[in-house]
Image 1 (cartoon, rainbow, N blue to C red):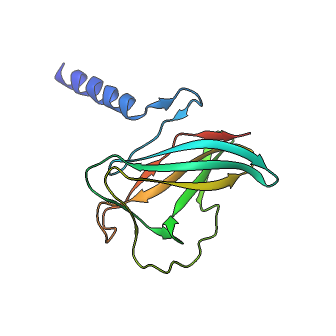
Image 2 (cartoon, one colour):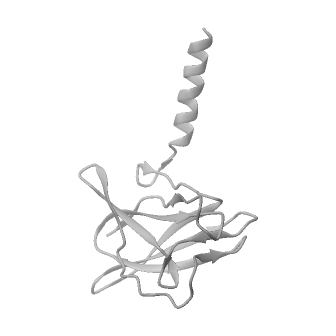
Length: 147
């Protein structure tokens, strides 16, 4: 009986950990070191749809990100044939003039704008709790559609 209760508790925890975004039916956002990523579809241009990626640090400590130019390194995955593929940059990183990671202070946020072709995507960023980036874990946005 005890093992049945442990299995049931484990299944309940797994279900709670795999929350879903009701608008897309895809896994919901994942926070890391109190950092959350949200996305907002902007206007349509000749090369695709603009998407504002909002990275918010809701914690009481600074959050640290690997650099891509002067912004955090963002990776994009696309949902194709029932699975997530990619995990690549959709923007070329320029050399940064400031060494070290991008730092977002407690309660701070930053916005990054990218352009996407039609499809379903999600964005991830590696987040660490220290300047040396010694404990990186991914924060993940909910799935979004570029029409």
